[in-house]
Amino acid sequence: MGLEKGGRKRAAVMWYLVGLPSYKNLSEVVERILSHHRQALRQIRFVPASSQSAVPLAVRYLRPDRQRRKQEVLQARQARTEQIQQLLGQGLTQLAIARQLHLNRKTVALYATTPSISAVSHPARAGILAPFTRYLAARWQAGERNGVGLYRDIVAQGYTGSRMTVERFLLGLRDLERHGQLPAMLSAPVELTPHRAVGLLLKRTEERTEEETQALLRVGQIHPDLARTQLLMHQFLQILRERHGYELDQWLAAAFHSGVPEWRTFVRKLRQDHAAVQAGLTLKWNNGPVEGHINRLKFVKRSMYGRANFDLLRFRVLHHRK
Image (cartoon, rainbow, N blue to C red; front, top):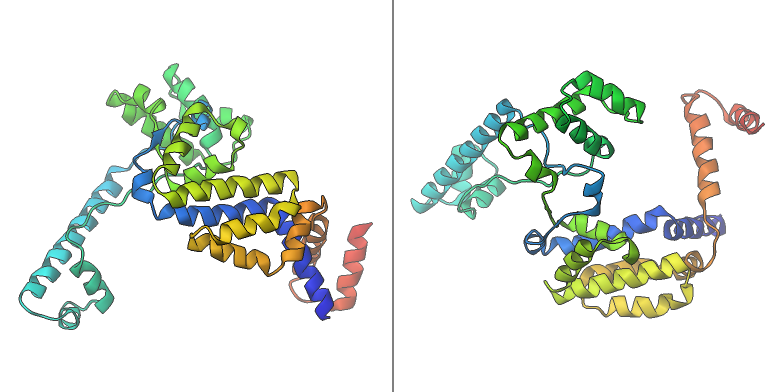
């Protein structure tokens, strides 16, 4: 039984390395490293290559009632901050303030160290409408204002989302057009976030535009850790794509001694199954077919809602194979 479990684990690691999950795990490590320098990254702006086929995601309609509600919440938090800091100035302890205002002590500690409250803007990410926004914007600029008709057009092109998503996007275009900002918005550069930076690093060098390449060069100049991270990620992707498993030990040593804690943790995890990892980076086989059979078995089992014994499950699995 132990050998069987070990074999399953090694097979899973091989699939982890040679398939999409390897990119996911590697990108999570790099994104955590980049997140330490989020403010510096936001100073870098570039026009992504995807803007040739999609309108920037900032084109969206913000409902006035939601905007008003957000502003009210922001003002209430600012008032609470001033109240807590005023009580601290009177000599009250954080515990006493928490009891007086019926708040958690951690909340009081957070507001006590915050001079002011500002709105937090989260960068929007590509959604289900992203592949069709360029078409919608072009039709809108051509004078088409029928939202139902535009929705039916993109449904014929493969769009599977709701009509309200399309309507909100069109309302955003209408609002920008009303303020004369639509032409500038369609060609506006975007801020470089850790997530976007990882996306650029995962692209092959020959697939990046000149502007994307320059953006990554500026990332490497922010801090030596980011320059080492870019180099290590490029080397690992090259080993993974070209199946150069014999270079793994050299890469592990370089990553472990890079001085970046996230890389050291990543290396420790890979070394726990060194043989399987090296095999996954060298051999062409993966665990995809096995995972497919497991998924089919689970589907058949769950379709019976747990009301069948092993004999019936075996019969149904064999029946589905025919």
